[in-house]
Image (tube, rainbow, N blue to C red; front, side):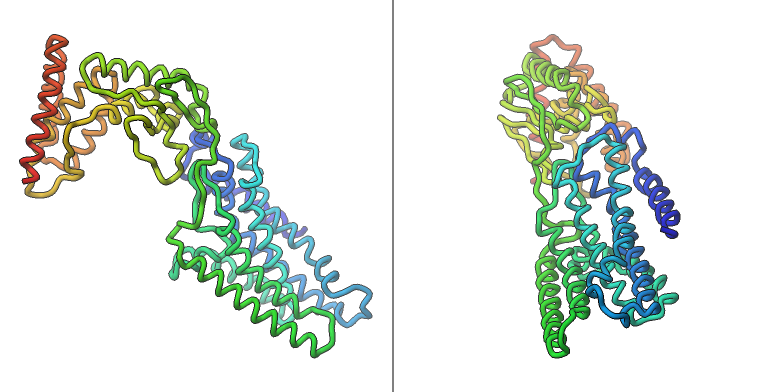
Length: 446
């Protein structure tokens, strides 16, 4: 209890410092909000701290048992029971270090946790008990005044530094998951079982040393426990060695969605931040498609338009019948609004009869850019998505062309001149501009 003001103060201070250092409070609470993701983010900063404090306090308590001569007293209780009673406050301290930031984050975001959302917390709580066992054992053999603070420092740097070194499997067995969660994702069981079994096997092997039995039985049990622990650790390391950096097994597509309408049916994430604007989003998508078709752009009406936020880290490509657009990011409180939705429709709906280079290479002509972008800007002006389109292309030009201003001016002039033409001539101009862009791109490729 006497250490509580110190670590509770550190947890509270670092919660607001670390979790709001990059993301402002308004950006956090307005979404997208996904409980497993928020719990994982909150715990990321406190795993190592919880294990370190637990180990240090357990060393202190283990040393106290030795100094007080508890083990030499007439046994009324087993050593396991004595150790459990002694370590209970230590384990509770470690649990509170993990549970406090999780509770604060869930209250802050007003999310209701699920069993899967709390799985990373359960991992940490299990490893807190493992570190308590190992710390108590260490306190039996070392002077606690030195080993208690030293062990806390060593454990903290052991956990934090494994996330910065190779081999990769060290990151995944440390007990602080190296894999972050995207919206709609949750950890697979193996991602959490590997670090738990890796550390818990050592704690079990250590606990076997307290086994009340004959000397011969103790020796056999300790040897068997040591071999079993090494086997489990090797298997865990082998399982994690196939994972990449920050790429432990996760499953996606668990976030609920809300849908409205038909042809197209529009779906957004239920907690993505734009769920209250679903009808407005669908109306904007339908109007944009109708407008593009009316001015002569060949647009196939998709059956569904879904929020790309629902796919997790592996984004799906749009096709003629199914579009994936960043609806929550665009229409949410932190996005550009309905202009962003129209911009997404523009980029997905307007297709050219050829492909273009994905990047500009030195020595290759980029004459096709003016015709391509003029045609796109003309379509953007028709649906009211010209501002985000120009902002994007302005950034692209600045990193590619020395005369970026002149290129942009020429693109805008061609598009605005086309908008002054009669309706039928505008459609013909658009298709002619597409054909010219394709011809120039093919000449560049040759």
